[in-house]
Image 1 (cartoon, rainbow, N blue to C red):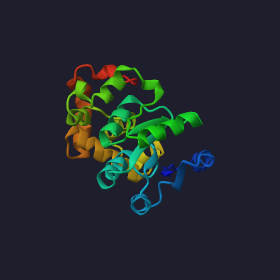
Image 2 (cartoon, rainbow, N blue to C red):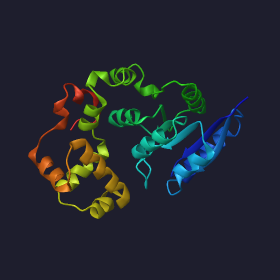
Image 3 (cartoon, rainbow, N blue to C red):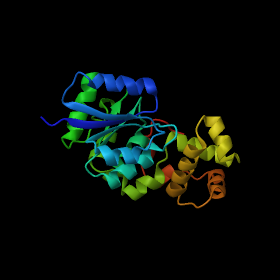
Image 4 (cartoon, rainbow, N blue to C red):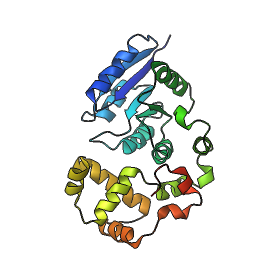
Length: 233
């Protein structure tokens, strides 16, 4: 029987080692690598050609969303399952849009982990049970049609972290100061700023600050978008 080849990307060492141990008793899976976010991830995928990539949503030194986009462009046979404690709905939309095939909660049972991997390896899309049957899961399954095109989604939705960074940019903080305040790397902040500029269709940090101070709410551009967010502003 062909084994499902898996790469784990998790910057927390204890969680990474725990995931490796979890699969030891299940011979249908093969952990070909367990990496943190300081390693050459793309090169490892190129070398090892995994079927499944288990990816932490909140890596410290790499933007996980950008990584998913890169992987899906370069390795169409590798399916990505994103792991998080409790993913907010905006994040799930963005990661599905980027090409993620599934989500798993980090406190899920071993059986849930294995079933999710089997389902995704078999070509299914898997959402966390907490979202199953909700309006949100229907939106995902319909390819985001209820909210318009993927381009609209990209423009109107920001993650909680991106909203925090917009507020700090509006307060005239530099990338280094924002990184210190939010306990992030400067690289991560720069990546967030890049994503914010793309979503707001702006070109500079100054424009972000000016736009934020103007009080315009991008969520007003799409009717009903506020109903999707568990973190109303």
